[in-house]
Image (cartoon, rainbow, N blue to C red; front, side, top):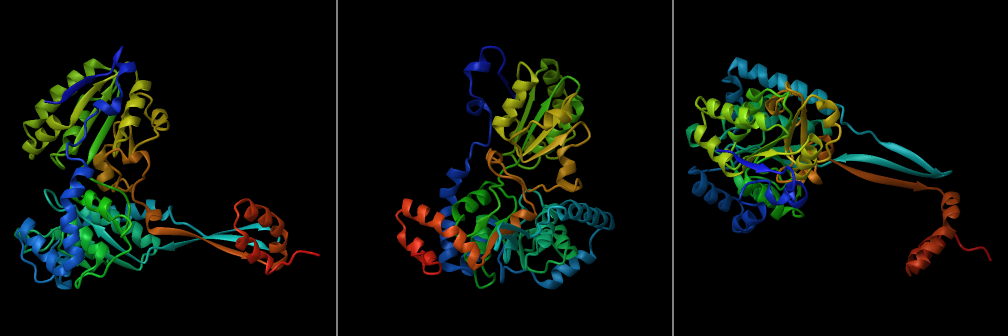
Length: 434
């Protein structure tokens, strides 16, 4: 079912891993053209377009996109006690990790009388996207809301797809998670139309300054299309897992992790890289065995057969090069020297070290954030954090003497760039000595 890629021997030098490593066939760039008319419609017609698109794709007729406050209160009251305890623990752990990311103003005396302060200002209003298509994600409420609250964001809005089986409201656990976190502005809107609603604003929903959160390929495409109209965190599209393992790894654990990631989405990508041919055989046997009891078997089999692979390499150093090239959203390192090897990774959304740090832990309770860059964008982007909701600004304050001490250098630099008005703006304050 899972294809095999041999990068050993001569292939090591002749094959570029980026040319052969699998990812979802539907690229974000291709999806942009599919979501463009939807986003343009929301820009032109606002709430009416959101309602019509929601009826077309979700089969739900909305009177208003905003979820009534009492629906959120009711969802909290009806929450299963075990699930409530798990959500509260996830909130606590996530707050603990993200609180350490808080930024503090720093003032530097550049010269006597001349100071630059770097201050951190939260984004005023953000739209937080929580998926809810094949699977509902109350955990994504936690991952989006907690860092935004710690950053000091003034206005938070959550959007999540409506569900016919829940009376046209988002998933009840998603609503309950919002309630536990004190978020009362929630919209029953999903997909590209939710991103467009946040970006352009509607009668129901004022526009936001930043959109964050994971989603399917169409959500990622809308974020790419509307970047600049609105800020985005990253293009968090179809999920993926990379695993670098050696013969010390337990094949049962690896098979379970591949299946777990594949159950998210038939467009999920799963990659196992190893220098042990025996391990590949053992993992493949475990995958076959575990699939017999997998609830979402059809979805998992589609993901594993379409854009997933076992990759055999000559050694773990080459394996590290391969996973760095792939730049996985989630990267597990399950080797005898896992900690040391993990410290050498350059490209990954998050790294899970050793046999007892599965991606599932990071999805829920590690305290880390599970909103991570996908599709290779981990080469230049990081996961959601408190920093995602903050803007650094410099505050410059020089007195007359400090400016005077800089004037001759500004003369030289402004002259070199032929920007004489720049020089004159300083010399209006600090005349040249005759």
